[in-house]
Length: 184
Image (cartoon, rainbow, N blue to C red; front, side):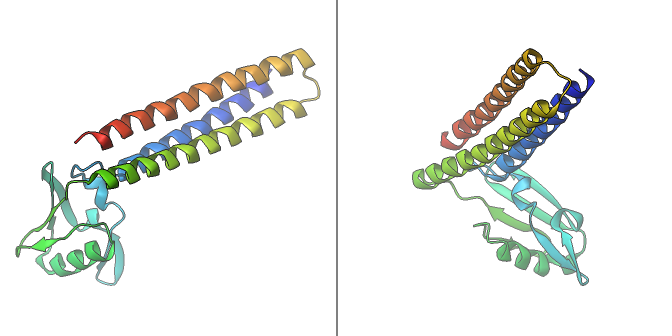
């Protein structure tokens, strides 16, 4: 029975990791509002070292449509501007001498639909990894020689129930994100 609990616990860990990954990916999909996480993948050349933007500047959202970047050193204004442009995020940084400001454009209906498709794709990736964890757990249970057949069946049913609950979590995340994207 201890082995069964270990198998289920490790499966839950994998499924939790899938949910966390999905949440991280969904925060990167912008819904028309400015968000500091939009600049998380931007790296700046800081004295010859590729450094994350948030380690060389303060990144803020003064309002729902604006992102501001205030470098800790004025000499970093141009490298940061170039890094944001090179990241190809669809943002147009303007440098006012002490601050870099970007206006986040409103989303068109077509772009919103594309983002919903992307969101559903991320959800499908999460579900695939959840199903993979389920399959691995069931295979491990089947390998247990000293476990009676009826207990194996019961354990497989329990694994399926857990899998269904994680799939429902993914659906819930997708539903919330889709609503957020489609709200004008």
